Length: 85
Image (cartoon, rainbow, N blue to C red; front, top):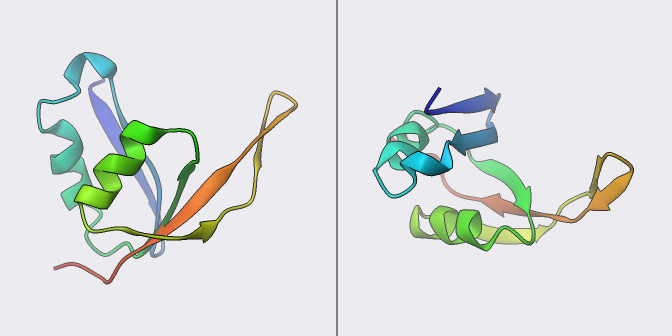
């Protein structure tokens, strides 16, 4: 698998690309498939993902709820944008 997206309603729930394919345009192509999405959450410390989303027109909308990963709470931030298409 090279990558995938998960969409739920107007939320982009996940966009993943195998690191061997970073910088090849795969993320951009997958992101286009989520053009109707207007909100997402991303791990606050994931600077690479945050830069990608900001380049793609997303705007920081505030802090998200922390998510539990194996008993450790990980901070998230929320992003929003106008519908594309």
